[in-house]
Amino acid sequence: MMAKLLGAAAVVLLLGASAYGAFFVAPNELTMGIVQRIFYLHAPCGMVALSAFLVCFVGNLGYLFKREPKWDWLAVSAAEVGLAFCTVVLITGPIWAKPAWGVYWAWDARLTSTLVLWLLYLSYLILRTMVDDPDRRALISSFYGVFIFLDVPLVYGSIWWWRTQHPQPVVFTSGGLNPEMRKIFYLSWLSLTALMALLIRQRYELEATRAEAQILAREAEAV
Amino acid sequence: MKNLGSVMVAYMIGWGVFFIYFVTVARRTAELRKDVERLKQSLTRGK
Figure 1 (tube, one colour):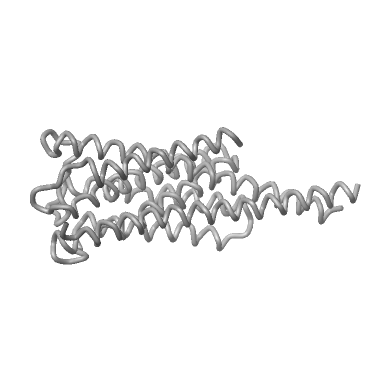
Figure 2: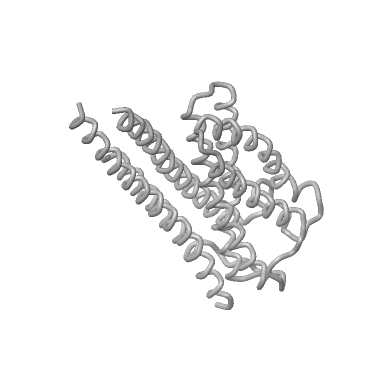
């Protein structure tokens, strides 16, 4: 319990530090001005969402190979957390786009593939509510989860492969980002990755407790 | 300070989504833990 509280406190501190950096330390971007500060939330959230979907993919593969419920719990936990991060990306993006581009949305490859990704993982979670038997649910959703992960490399690569309204990569390219901005970006990325780990752990615990409750309920019925 | 409102709204919505999600999961887990305890007690009484 103490370790969990300390972990949560560390995440809150990291998030506070990254917010302070984004608002008070990072320099103003010359063209966009203050609105560019959304970048420190929007871009790391996008990367963390893709990481969470990767964890979901690993969980799905783990279940398909091992057929142990813990892999399915990991997959659904990561899918839900990834969807939360992807939701933030899809909300903060248009808020930034309006002053920067003059429109909230453009149907370019990055934006469209991200929206499709959000819909796919939403459908993954809806699919799970349609199957009652836990083993069958885990098997069907694992197959589906492996299939929908195909959109993740597409989202990541879209700004490298196609000309898009969305900016080209600035983080992993030389000279793309001011060194001060880069530091704040990495801090935000670290803090949001820590938040992702905390949320997945919390959600995993929910799934494990649910499984325990189901076993006990069956035992109680038998008695 | 043009567009400061947009920045504030983006951060508030972003953190709001995570906070609400965290609270929802914690509440659902706490409810399930109560169920588990109740079931354990009823099974102990039944034996």
